[in-house]
Length: 324
Image (cartoon, rainbow, N blue to C red; front, side, top):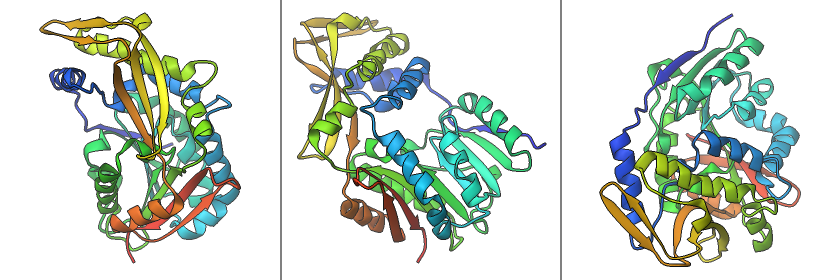
């Protein structure tokens, strides 16, 4: 049986992380990057969110793959290198192995330590498949190591499920998709398979990000505990409540933490006072129409896109080639 290869490209810079977080918290409109929602507990809470009745994206996307996987395989190349962006537990990509029969599986996440058990388990079920775990923060650009194959000659299927593209503002999404297209390489069959959450009724969108059980609220508020550990701040959970709303003009769900009373947050060399009702903007999740996302793919240089949706058109999976 083959063994997975693990390569850590991203090296966390604790000083840089602290400076980034405190800079965002000190702004007139305080904000943080959504990647800081995903510490160990935050990642487990997000997995719980995907099981909630209100949170439709995960199960809707899974149903699309189950129903249309064979059709997707007529567009995406078989026996290609499958590059799984934000692989997590690798479950979504592994369900495509039967359809795509990849020659190599490259799982990309911010930490290879997070990937180890998933890839070790996956290798036991697919003993002949080459597997590579890459620890990389691709939010600022995507670069793969040589162990991920030859971009000059190998067909690549880049896989970005789960509507994670929604965490990018439209201009950022365009830059990111251009870097993805470059990573597809030169093979004429290469391309991108991507999940996209679609615009729908505000009440349905807001319920998905503010569930009755309060799991999403716990996920958002856990960010404060993570910041306390990273920055030495003194955030207290009772002082903050979770807020989720759909900004129609921007076509995005926004998550915020709102101060329930006037509070002063302190750290070693600074403070920030928050008035009652003042918010920290913690995440955006942009929602697209089929037409607007198709146009974005064309802007990024992709060709000949096609898509599949659920019957209610709540979610879409796009395949788009990186060449004409």
